[in-house]
Length: 80
Image 1 (tube, rainbow, N blue to C red):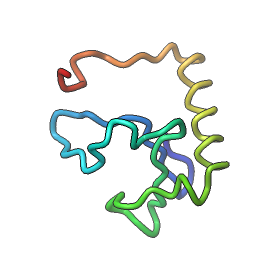
Image 2: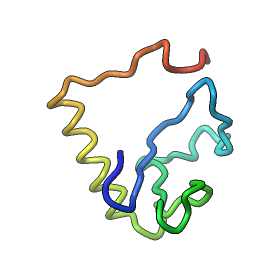
Image 3: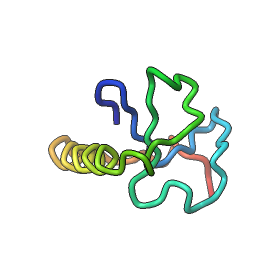
């Protein structure tokens, strides 16, 4: 989910990506919040510093999923 300079990642398991956040609970309840202007490589999560932004983006993402009927496609994710 992107909004201005912020990008919220709630889960990332694309086949082509290397997940540097290996801990299963790392995403926590609010996901990872990246500041794209200051950290375009997405190496640092600002979720702890800006929990209100992460929560707002999570709420917007949840609402968008309902409005658009979005769902994860199984073929987009690595098998567990």
